[in-house]
Image (cartoon, rainbow, N blue to C red; front, side, top):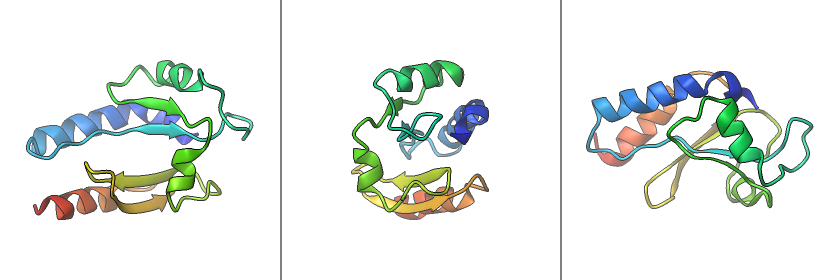
Length: 114
């Protein structure tokens, strides 16, 4: 669950993107598919995690039934799983790992026609 150290920077990146592209709706969403032991998350884990990462403006939830996990090509083996969704929830791209998110920005801008 590598976002624990990144959430503040995620909020800053969200704010920067909004400032640079005010016409493109954007928000991070964190969906937890497991707790720290790898077991499915309990219902209150999303709120606990949200508090742990500094109460960002974007939503943080617990995918207790793993529906989000099952709806994406991410298989949960390599953290972090990241997907870019359009505002109609079309999956634009999915990747894994903690590297650069330039691919995500590119997918968003390409989809928006920028």
